[in-house]
Length: 193
Image (cartoon, rainbow, N blue to C red; front, side, top):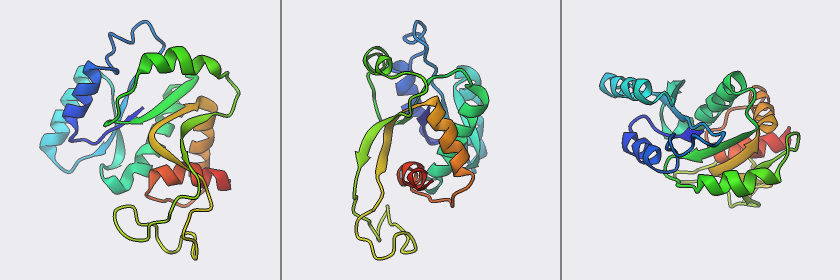
């Protein structure tokens, strides 16, 4: 599950030519999809539709594709997985600007974990500084009086999960307030519940 932006056609092309190439993965139980949102440009939408018809790997959600909607993109991806990927054991959430040795993940990492375990593999951040200004500003209503987050955060560039966690995260997301920073939202609020 690759988080991408509508206009990042070149990044998706690059990934399809490298680690996300379907021909390279044909002997492995792996399927790559690119998650995107809506675009306001009819030209970009048409190009995306052509790309989707050509590669059958684009999943478009019903939200404007914007940096502040990454949480919506993730929830849409989890909803799609719950609906269409019932038999999938592992889910890898990755950003479109990350390259991964997918064969190492398949060969070395996945066999270490078994179905039924509660598993999230990512770069955990504990007691991260809370930025109140700038691109990643956390609203003062969240953790008032704190300078560092009391909850763990999972950096979202590479997150490996067992499918049971995805279902839990999707169900939990229905009952917690929206927060636009997806790395923080998925795991920090999941810890609360």
